[in-house]
Amino acid sequence: MKKLIGILSLILVFSFTSNAQQNKKKMGEKADFSPEQIAILQTKKMDLHLDLSNSQEKAVFKLIESQAIERKKARDEFKSKREKGNKPTSAERFEHQNTRLDKQIEHKAAIKNILSDEQFTKWEETAKKRMKTNKKNGSSQGQNNGEQQNRKFKNRS
Image (cartoon, rainbow, N blue to C red; front, top):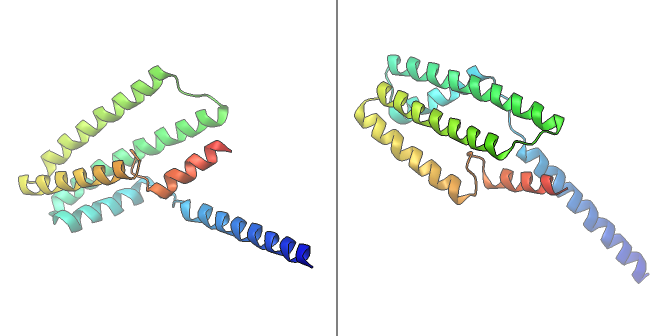
């Protein structure tokens, strides 16, 4: 009788843990928005936060949309290389990080040209806060800590 109860309790424990893992996988999934949808959402967020004029809104939309298109191309290229089993060399990693930083500098300059001085200061403050929270969560790309841990777990298995 004790063995039966022990076996049943083990079965219950395994079923609960498998359910919990399936729920975590579902929570980590992201919506796959088009570059235009991403640009619309980010522009509206900036409009709410910075109170943009119509001309500023249009300029920000164009900037964000072009960035989103570039990111989608790069992401697709990276996925295809990863599926083929090609890992980037240290020189390729350096080049990727270097171009990413160059693009960030260009983006900051473009935003500075679009926004007023007051709006730009407010935008910089929020960017600094975002960077701090990303570093605090152990992420350099803006993902939350749970997604980062899920990715680490998947890489182990």
